[in-house]
Length: 325
Length: 290
Image (cartoon, rainbow over all chains, first blue to last red; front, top):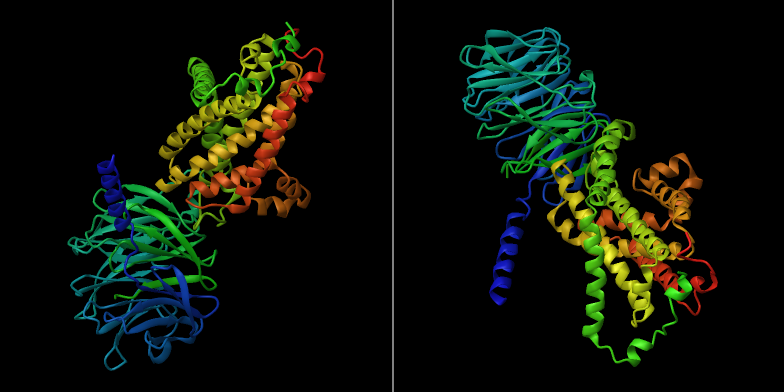
């Protein structure tokens, strides 16, 4: 009896340790409507702080050392730099008009910004805080993805319905790939083999072969009880091992879990209303979604693909980024 | 055969006078439990129908109403839940409610058929026999709830594993409350036919005027009067107790109210079935003449 109890308690201890919370990361959420960034502790899942920022904050990312947040203040036509130690705005970058989304190069030196109103991709040198180059692209550029080796940049243009492949050395467009209507987001697979582009109106995710630059597969989404018009893919994230992808489905209020090898949709996770962007914690145990209409973010456990908790943030949360340490 | 003769006066102290020990009490309890268990096992259709009812609600009703009722976060949930996840604790309560009433229905049937004589002429105290009967009924209904939860798991309703353990005492307490209520009601019913009326007047109002199908805040939004009725409904607290327990939490307010209602209904049932004070004693034609 005693032995059984010992085994049972040992088992419980192991289970408890498996269920222990991940390391604390800070989650930064841009709130489009109330011009703030909400800081949430990833362990306690509680709001730690709210930072006042410029008008209409949307795209948000963080330097690789975790010291600075870069934030698109779209209506202020600038990119703000926030110090993560003091939560103060310590500078700005010349982004060009109406910056919406951007991507940081793997070496952390360059920021590539999509200027929605100007049909441009602005290349910003972070060291000199100046514009290094402007690349003309299609109408209403939005999605920005960069290859893991930093050599290729993909920009999606919402009205032209194209993914533009840009060589980061020559800053020339090398390929244009037609995808479905209103492409919103581009994400490279970690092994550099594919680019996934979501199409908001088309309701699909196009998988583009990075070698041939051709669409090799289109992922469709079907949710019982929902009209296809309300399924609008936006944010896409792929796990570091390249096996699983998460797609935010906008007004479908769900995040699709896709097998990144077979392209089968394995599950739809219910989150808040109008789910927009996604971000992994650095340990990849959790993925966080921003839910614009319900003004909250949802933590999803990557191991089980279950929604764990939703936390109320500011008005109309748009983008999300997690501190690297 | 009238119940008057079937329930020949046996004083509560008779058993003690005859010197029954704990072992004899346990033999009696076991007898009642085994009888109830056998009756349940031998009536497969009863088991199936007891599962089909909540499963229909889960598979059909929940699917249809998923979009209508929308989503919201209310305790004990920490994030958005699908409608089928929301109504599962209510359906557990529904199983207990129907099962509790069915168990009581069997007492009316027993009384009509004269089988109750076998039980009530036993020299054990009446309260002990009634509690044993209750325990047997509750045990059977808890088995039904766990069978339902197992099927619901495959339907995507997956509470934390601690919830499956913590819900057991909540189910037991809620089951005791509902079975006691059924027993109290059964003491007031003369014939089996009358029971159908009570089912309609008790079960359905209790079920619908509760948070089993819709959150109380939503009821409050649409009708403040209905909200007050819900608050006066003991089943409301059983459902909330089960809901919180299924997610590893204790809703202390509901717990206290369920315990209080159980004591009230059980006390009432014991009094009602007591041949010296109860309602049965005053009824002249309570059984055997249906």
